[in-house]
Length: 492
Ligand code: NAD
Image (cartoon, rainbow, N blue to C red):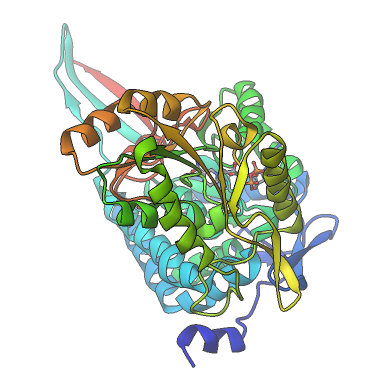
């Protein structure tokens, strides 16, 4: 038996139906819970505590207490050590975290064990390294001023609100830089996938983070998330989720001029030129949409293919897609898991139906699937005969559904790629180096992959143009969003 299958047999302990608040497990005010379901089996996994507005008040008090007390007095170097210790502790428990992520989200254990969790560890270590290197500067003085310098200070209390597709990873993208810079965090995970976030909160306490530095409040979007956005004790909101919710948050945050980072939706174009290595491009297009069940903000969900290569590429892509079967997410060989919920699966199927009605053809897939008669699975799907104005080419489907659109030259490819309200990512496949860079420069997207797709790095900034959001996560850039700069003028 492999490690993964072993761990699946020995199901790890799930967190209790409590909030992680002020360094301990506490009952939510009102004692409400909600059910967490395994989308692959439709079985109840556990009950999860549902926080209320009063719990947000309690968490803010605990977090601000830490900021004014022990955490505020912790040196930058010590913060770095704590983050590094958290990474080590997570690495030791990596199998448990991966299995819980898979049970909660439906993603293949292959992804949670070998991509998501190692990437969380990597992100924690990357920002552990930054903790004692975030510094102000001494500036040239003018006039009667003797000395001018800047200080980089933590923003304060950060409210992190995250989606369900990469539950722990997208939380780490916020928590790691926030803590490295000396902030405190109140994290609201998505209701569908709260478990690993709760486990991380408890693990942070185990490795020595003071009580109140990281609080985890599962619960309703508007009740918990909305209260956080409006809360005067929270200084910044770091949000990843849908554009619709992000717009609402931006409006609400305006009332208190709250600092805001928004990582929103996408409809990313993956552009294949006829001069590319078509086998590599077909594989890249396949991974670009079917990795993570297509529930990936940066998924290459619009495949733009140079007309002369369209049919050949499609043939290769469909052949590969037909070998991909949805299967038990806990099996180590599975590469396509269950969609996160019945609601999400039905929404994706609704898009396929809409595509059909608007004239698209289903080249492969298009239907729901089940494993052992259960689960919210779906066949990997490719739609052809699509033009960029159709709903399936404009709206984020957030599932394993790819649309292909032909183009005639680079000019048209760039125009089609940019004809979207979104601007999160894009891919370019060509053997012509000059063309690759020229096209990359003209794409309105926060990330461009050339002859690859879906690669991320803790050191490389990630974020969106246009309605895909503002601010950047990861890399050195993220530090700017978790610090305030104070200028100090010293008279002679
Ligand atoms: P969602 O917007 O429905 O929810 C995201 C989070 O916001 C959840 O925790 C939810 O409970 C909370 N929320 C809901 N209503 C709220 C409100 N009124 N105030 C405050 N918080 C509220 O998104 P989702 O369905 O969980 O995730 C899918 C979406 O996330 C997709 O659109 C996807 O593109 C996007 N996403 C973006 C990125 C990125 O980095 N740009 C990464 C992953 C996912």
